[in-house]
Length: 170
Image (cartoon, rainbow, N blue to C red):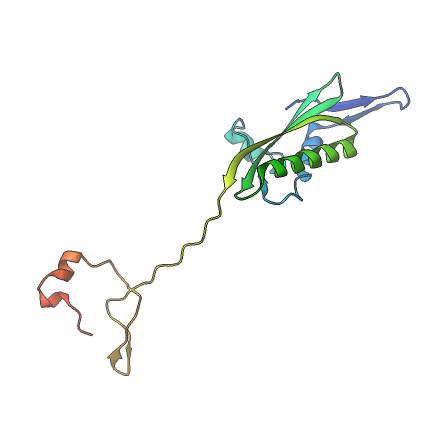
């Protein structure tokens, strides 16, 4: 990412207009908010310290400034949800980023490169395993059947042994 601010000076308007690179980064990242099924990703090139120091809106977006042409190239790194149409989403990202940056800053966007770094797979939550108890609670003086188990799993050899002391009478 270029470290310099983007500066505009014209003969018609005295003085300079300076736009910080961070502003362009935020505008580009905010353009992605309405696109469903994507998440900004920190690129592999970003170090651990960058991930801690940078704001979430800046991760995954890089700006490259061409001073002579007063234009920028923008790289967007995303993670996409499984099942989304990657080319369709990528075109929508390019269009949204270019439109927002050009509209809000008057900076020409030469190109928007989209990098799909990962796919998020939906994980189904695991159902809790039923617990079994060694001794069922008693109701009216009689033990009741139960699915829960408190304590360590019994040793298979002990359970299968012929020793009657290893069996609970229900």
